[in-house]
Length: 629
Image (cartoon, one colour):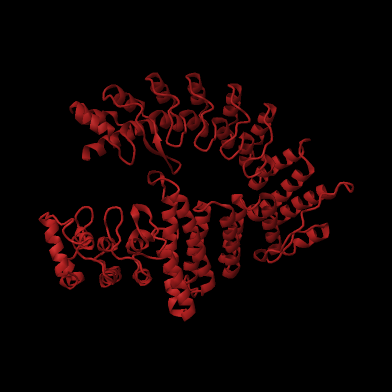
């Protein structure tokens, strides 16, 4: 381990002399192990390429026979790239000499990362023009897109690298290529404010098209707030009256929510209204409101210049106008629609208007659950925001007294979360076990655990009917038999300290005896096991600490499980019992073990220890009992 660290650090820092000291005197097998070993996901060769140390790269390749196609993890601008080959690392970091060396050594110029990003795309991202040209001249395919369908031309446009975009176009890049979600390079220009490149694309035959959300480049520029691009596009002869009006109105909404420029918003909305009413023989009226939206305080969109002028005296009305405009033009499925509803709600919460925040967030959550597939990360983010909000409200902060949380509000969020979990479970069951990715499912499960913990805080104030309703919902949740990562059940999660880590802001601390008691009360099995054969008691044992602040709660959890029938001598897959997993103290410090060991348990352990044949000899129920020991 020590030598591996030294070799890695020397390669990272460009200390080729130090590498020679440690590697030249070792035999081939030892050298091979050291140069293949990964530290923080990367090999010495990958770090040499990432940090631009050509002599290190040459030494590792020529003297140590390092595989020049090996892959590893590297970090750029805080983002970790998985499965990055050495050539990709050198191209992304702009080390031209290393790129040349690796290509001449035979590196595959089109070898990708796990997200299907090529070295060429990496060079395009950060504007390394000479590397881009070199790679293309040596066989790099300009049309290989990443997993999202974004091409080298698209990323060059998004990052504003005009010289690279022009070079790729001259080389034959498809100017109208679409990504998985239907956006083109024109959309990327609009979203990044690259007007100069947009004009270049249009000169090369780029066509204005809508993406999967129905967004044109004009609307994309309006959402991003790039006024000059909006002005340029609405001046194009092919831009129709309706699209001009929508673009200006959407830009006005962006001025309200993103730029906080109320006068600018009024100006844009006035231009839109002039566009709508400029031709008396061809008036373009706004769609009539089908029903009032209580979350927006029943606000309706203004339809006259007088109403528009009155808005400036009521900033809150303007904010609701912006939400109405965005929802009408973008539709409920567009991420920005629910994002800005939640954003506005968060600002109300910052001002202490929690009721208004909850109303808006509930409306956004309802919208997301109607139009998005279950377990969508955006919907999960909404559930987490509610948990964080309720935690903040019920906690004293900077001399601000706790604010009561409505049972109705937290209960509605819990119900919606369980419905989302049930739908997500149905989606997962359609896939084979090998193809199931429970990442999002597990995250939602953890968020629900925090909502349960928050509800436990409210239990002393609940009426009997409310308490019964809550426990009925928890019963329904438990009997869905949800399983997260590692096969963890809700009871496993309630006993695990890792459950605490749910987001950027603190919500509840785990393990939580209150949640354990709640789950056990509604029928959660205390002897259920995860994929490694660990029961909740195993997890609780691993989390027992001698720290005074944590120990009492975690001891209570241990006792709660035991008193509810958990087996203190149950073996996991490694033949370890909860008693053997307790660290820093003996089992006698926790509970009197003989109080929880029966003669049946002792007999079962003897049968397993001496490998006595029992299957087919004892009743089936006893077979399972013996097996757990």
